[in-house]
Image 1 (tube, helix red, strand yellow):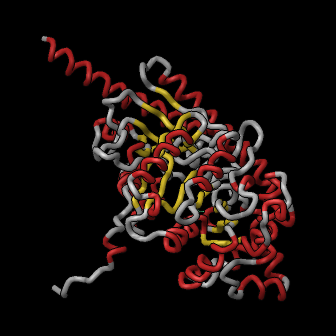
Image 2 (spheres, protein in one colour; image 1 turned 45 degrees about the vertical axis):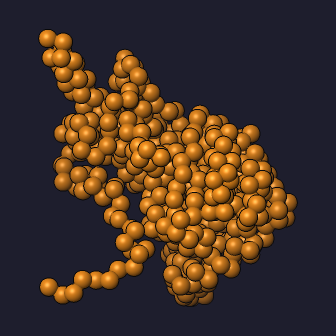
Image 3 (cartoon, rainbow, N blue to C red; image 1 turned 135 degrees about the horizontal axis):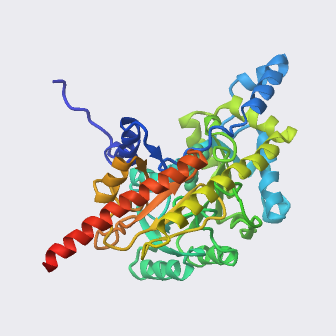
Length: 436
Ligand SMILES: Cc1ncc(COP(=O)(O)O)c(C=O)c1O
């Protein structure tokens, strides 16, 4: 045996993602319908558009050289200009109205890289991040690597409850811990995992709260708008960033993975100006620039209008998948007391709540019954951080309508209903045996 490795404390704080167990189950079980993974629809990829863009680019020596050479750490200026314009147009402002310039835009290897980099730039072990409860669990793991403590803020139909956030900030201040609060993290459009959206009137108030409690240093809001462009009902709502008119308090980050292709793995962010250099300096250590070819492809897709035409089609595809899932859930679970679900206006997820006392996590009777019926979901407890008593809600699940076809979605929900019926039968049996 060789001597043991001497791993860094960061490495020791980083465990395998709990989702690996579910991916393994999916691989091991033939015929399983996965409503678990947050992957995107494969039949709707813009492959013809990308093929055309790449062929055109490679046919011209000048554009081929530009795309195949290294790019810059901050990212392709032409694409940065387009995404800046895109976000500002969606928000009905000019960049200068909210003190933004091209220099505040950074392109990354997916928005995940920006989430990670922000941890490296801002977090010391023991620092605090306030996040919706539940929240995007992959980011929790990332924050854990950085040694951050995540504190969950309850949500209601309007997303993060600002009264609860304010109460928590006051509590932290009284406990002398406000100094440790670095970020308020929100997935504010069709949240992963609940599908909820932060209400319009809460957006400016959130910025005000961050300002009010920025007593020791700036507390930044991390607005993760990954699903903003996947809206199926109603009109877009203004970003939180729109209300940060001095460009000081809000980091806006989003991605081309969901509305286009995760294979291009390109994210973009609008940063407060004084955060750009620290982020790019560290990004330089990571990769001194994300895929230049992917950035050139995306730039051309935006320039030619192919991206927006694709988005119109993609929304249709997801709208019908979402409707297939909601119809199946309403049909199958209508008569189940205490079972509730959210109706998302966009995104990729439906969140279901079962009566308390119905554990849904790894090893629970429901997950086992679901796998033997042939369907997989993500347990809700993965999105929660333990409270003071070390407890997390464990009677919720996340279902994704991203990958499966509408007929598979409906079949997957029927299987879930059968799994739940097995549980109801065994609970009834247990009650009757207690009574007899
Ligand atoms: C809320 C949220 N943020 C960020 C990401 C990261 O996406 P990517 O790195 O592919 O841009 C995801 C991916 O699922 C997500 O759900």
